Image (cartoon, rainbow, N blue to C red; front, side, top):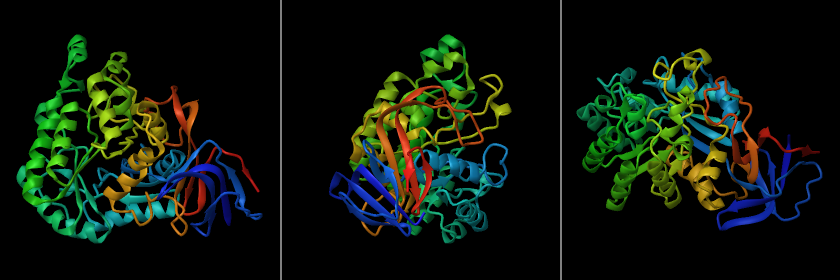
Length: 425
């Protein structure tokens, strides 16, 4: 496809949204304006849709290398493209863990080979994610890693975390924390509260999240590192983050679509698709999270797309692994749960995560002539039932439900990687 003309959408430009056309040529935005004539272009009708920077997910599990029976970079990239994403940050809890430069380069290279989205590797904080010794942080940095996390596990050793923060602060990178205290969470399968008490199931208290964030914020004051809180799930965590920002600390935070959408009441079904870590919380927590996204206290939405093989989830709730898939329905879930306007929507889904990931030179920017053509066409008004997935995994709470919002098309480096719209030649 040499030229693509996106016609009649509401386009998010630097000075605000405007209904206009966008011409893509040679991997870049070549022209913006009403009534563009491009007789050789293929035409995509974007009437009623928002056109903006492709979504960026700073928390995706692609499982490669080592766990390709769950997902691989090809299938995960396909799911991301179907969800409107043009870039994803791949979490390093693979086998082996991404704790050295050559492993990070492998992930990035595989993403380029697949070519559907940019795959940006995150690196571990500790070797093998064991929390005992720092990873090869300098090697990872040279390989292009800018975000460091032991996601799936909390860095429990405050001394080790301090050293990592000091080193990463000098580099200019980000420490991203999976904030769940392992002692407080031990044995828990869902939120600790009224529902868990009635079910007789061990719970994970809100304090397990909040105590880690509070400790880490003290270390941020000491080290000055850029600090990012993953998958925030409690009202108390929101309050801690808001106070840290008011203090001027370099803190950002994400929330998942499922924590914006579902509560711990869903666990009464005992369906393992509702098992994740942190667990689904109370209605009051969900309300606080939605408000925090709307206000900007929580900077961005991240999917925590966590695929598992069917046989792994096909067991009792207590025995099932934590994690759900969500790349394809994240935008619709956020649109349904929070209902942001076009500018805040693209900020939370595109601009803010690109800024945190350090990829704003090519992602997350308002649509302007000369920029890389990494774009999404999102229909915010149409409702649709989620019925299929391009992921290898089906452990998703979104499937079978109706959502308000549809990703009509995704353009990555000028190429249409996903389309639900008829393209005319």
